[in-house]
Length: 190
Image 1 (cartoon, rainbow, N blue to C red):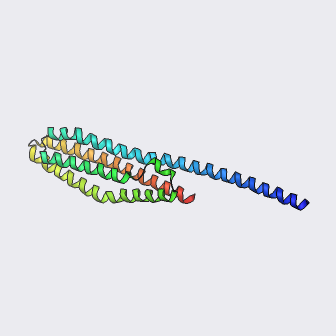
Image 2: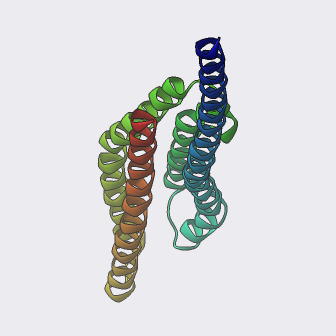
Image 3: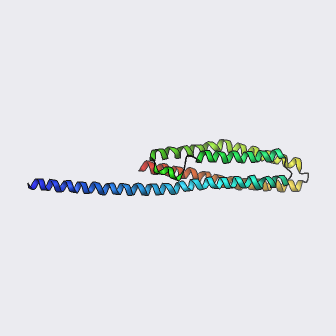
């Protein structure tokens, strides 16, 4: 009889411990998902910054290029280039939303690997196309500007802008890929 009471007490203690462990697992899962949601917002903010800069270049850059007497084909090419970049960003980021974190963590990790891989693959298009765009810009500028001083200032300003834009773009690229790495690592550790 005493053994039955002890056994029953042990069963109640085990049930109580299981309940506490389940509650702790729920809290840990909630904390993990909150941290992941924050990292996803960083990734999505980068996408929004890319959209805003693309819209800025399309609207104001077109007028600035027209003012420095670039051809209509160059302006249209620039607009198409920016639209291509914005579309690629949208396609990469459409699979990654903060709401997606509520699902299976392995699916989230797979999506993060996809985003990271696409960001790396995008560089194979973006870097050569920026170089081609700059060459086209310089060719158009020297064809339309006869004044060497103005041409030199324009080229120096363009190279400075390209350098600053490249640094900003690389930092944004690194931020997204590093955040993807952190999310994947968090999921694998949990």
